Image (cartoon, rainbow, N blue to C red; front, side):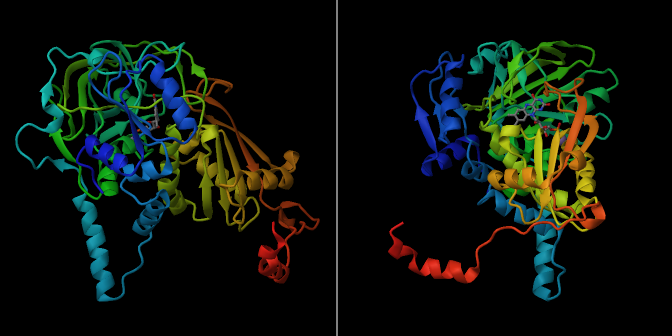
Length: 480
Ligand SMILES: Cc1cc2nc3c(=O)[nH]c(=O)nc-3n(C[C@H](O)[C@H](O)[C@H](O)COP(=O)(O)O)c2cc1C
Ligand SMILES: [Mn+2]
């Protein structure tokens, strides 16, 4: 379902008991982090700080911070429901009856309806109700998150750029350090599409628009690792079952969703770099200050009732765990398109998503686990996965106790490790080189004779079904 605005989402969360309002004037300088961190770590609600110190714009945080809220944000009943929907889209049942055929046509016809389009309404679009003169970032309660941070930064920006060659839109989430009222950093990392657009702009200034808020599905879409050819706003339209309606910016040739809360318009100059950071990062460590591109603001527009959306990153689990979990569930059917042997996937939040992937497979031939490791390292941003653990299909990848039992028991480290080199996440602090270093695969599947294992693989200890039934029937009498 589509939300008319971020305000609308706030009301939905409130109705469902998922949001707390805080009228105490918490300071965006560190205090909001301390409050939000405690609430995130304990699975608490979304928080709306109505009067953050020093700003008259309310701040929303932890709005995506549970499975229920993330599902609500992307318009789904649950994250697994989205997996099923995407699987159905990719593997449609071949229509036989007339009714099936009509359903088929309706389903695929609808996708065209989800393509982003120009705004239907007339008059001033909500996101341009106020044109700030002069533009002033200090109006907003931008967080300084951790004591040794290089300054405040915008934590949930939706960065819109157009491919200088093909014109295809990209929306990514890249943090933006605030340098002054009209200048910020632009932390698109080496492997990200924003950086690629800048590389392809042949030294010319590249226009950028940054949105904050609006339908929360836009925020999820900006974090999704979709292929470069696919517009994140089409994904957003598909998830919310309604096309995203776009309006042109005032000073740059970029279109943005009409309903977002705040728009920062401006440009980056491919030749300019400025020291960005250090910042406490989603790895739970500070990542060092480094030169990154600079974003110059040419205009700021916003809704009259704008809410400033924010998150914090730090030692996991944090709110961003749910962005990762939504991606894990949405992309599982897409991974299965290329690797049908994959049964399930777990990217544990504690391992920051790119440090560990646990994958279960239907093993069909010797060396199959290693084939899956290399295939995943060749798939989009999965290339950054430091450790891949492969287990048999009967292992529940989400039960870390079961995974640890099977992995430690099933491997001979001399035989079952696959060591390779490859790209690493730019935030990885341990790699041999920045952005490049070791990858490890652990083949924790049962070993087969044609993999050189000629002893018998042991049987698991499982109770007889008849004994279980008998004990079930007397269980209540045992007082246990
Ligand atoms: C809260 C949050 C903050 C993020 N910050 C950054 C960042 O500063 N730089 C970056 O390159 N990616 C960051 N990411 C990850 C990207 O948004 C993600 O890789 C996305 O797929 C990039 O989009 P792209 O493939 O269109 O470049 C962040 C993700 C989240 C959830
Ligand atoms: Mn993208």
